[in-house]
Length: 166
Image (cartoon, rainbow, N blue to C red):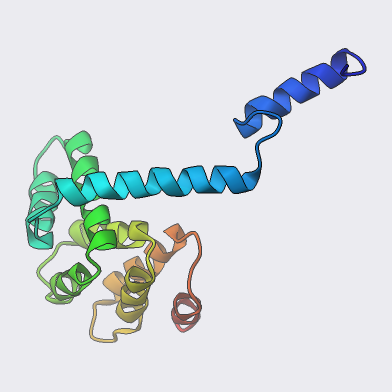
């Protein structure tokens, strides 16, 4: 059926790499990924009901101030904040105020910018571009904003233009 041992191995290998059976299409996989993403969003929507961005930012700051760093707790708090920014884009204004107030340490600024970039939404990308272009921001914060843009899977034209303008 396979025409030899090499062909059989190649077919088995391709099947393992794709994670699908021989008749699956990429269209079907896209639908499954979309459904899984919706379920995850629903879980986070429930988990984050009534949570304000300031609460999660305060938790990030608290975790960053403790030695030794509890990386597991920090990761989980960052993940919640990422999802909050995805589900409640208006929370980005709170992030803007916190970042432009000048009260956050460099580590806090870098961590929060990484969270904003990880949200991967157009409003989050617009905020990063705004921060890069904000001449009132400290140079280190503007540079950290630009560096965080490298996390973006599909940067918007605005992000690309902001990065070129540095």
